[in-house]
Length: 147
Image (cartoon, rainbow, N blue to C red; front, side, top):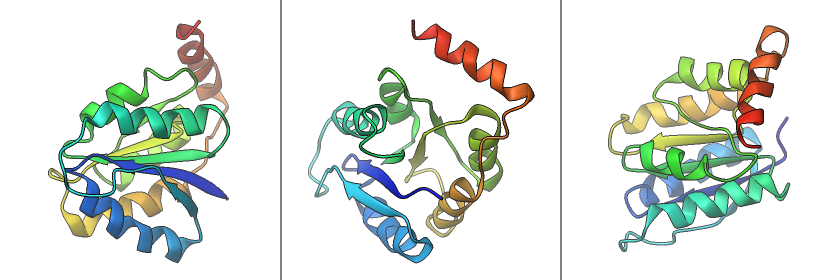
């Protein structure tokens, strides 16, 4: 079980990030909130970087980033060496990102996913583990792209 994650958002994801804290508390996942801390406009790459670097440095085992679409933060976080960020839009994509891709950062689009579904996506993410096996060499090839 994951012990601690980095949790971040931009202004568009701020309110959902705050709601997710309750879900994380319920399932026993500790988190460090790396911002943003309001709905004031900010640049999403700054917070994707904070989450990504926390994961890459081992300060957090995984990360969650919330923005309007989930796309921009995924692109930005994936620029951090060692991060495999995946955007999930339902429970199945959240599980597959963990099981097949060993993703270590989950990105969520607060404006494109119904609010009631987001906690289920997060729970599905944390219920899944990397399966290894045939997926191992593929993840190794992804990691080699960083070199």
